[in-house]
Image (cartoon, rainbow, N blue to C red; front, side, top):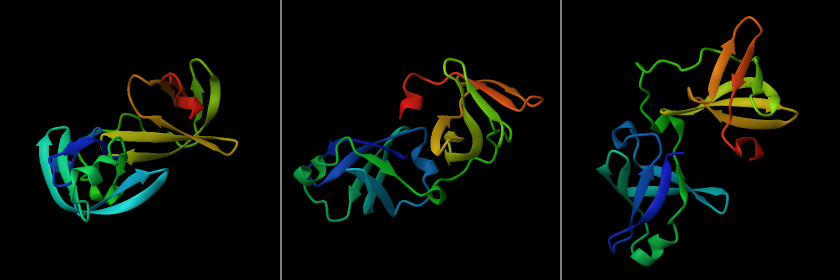
Length: 165
């Protein structure tokens, strides 16, 4: 996820997009985005993209020309393809390759087997699979408590409600 549309900006149909764990300069392709509308990712072309701060940008979508038209997007989540994000090659991995490791939550016990890492720069996720369900666990030092290579187990402390999604 790139971020969330916070509100309209001006009267010509622009919106303020609050970025999530990414800076404006890390977005390399600014031609289009996908907006979550009723659970569907709908593509929109961008005609104007301007950094507002380190954590927000002003965006003008093609064919959205009034404040009223833009207002319906407030609160919507915005996504981009992973290829549109510049990767920071110097950023070290928080966790090494753990595919196949048993994942054990501090409160819930065994929750599944570690799969692939996914997500965008600044917001990596670990897929945890169990009986057809896939949980996406944020890769963060506050969540990952211990990785034991001998037993091939990961001890995590998930935030409240993460496993109920």
